[in-house]
Image (cartoon, rainbow, N blue to C red):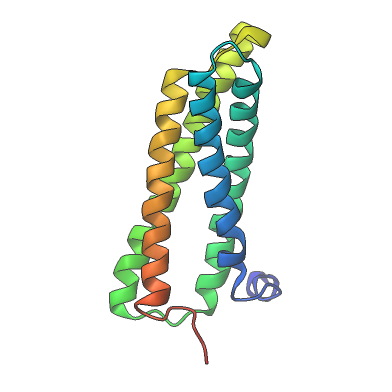
Length: 152
């Protein structure tokens, strides 16, 4: 039953979804940085929090899409090692954006409209940006160096 539902989606669903995930995490990092630079402007902490919330949803969507795309792929032993690391990094990225969101939401909850960007939340977001970049690099390696998911 689950297999039938999974195969309603195309094999290319992961790359279709994951690029949005990468972009939204990068934008969250930029909003956090802008909030630290322009401390008097209350817009950036709000945008930072909203983008972190979308980052959580996008990361979950990318993970689900990855499971779907993986179900179509022929995975060699070499690719299996890279894929395992790719998945681990993706999960860690998700944990980081959740932590960043919780820390920023906590600050917002306590300070309301006067909340600034939380330094710890920004730190976790920067690490998430680094991790999503490394995760994407591994994904690109699997496609471009090992032809994972390439049919033709």
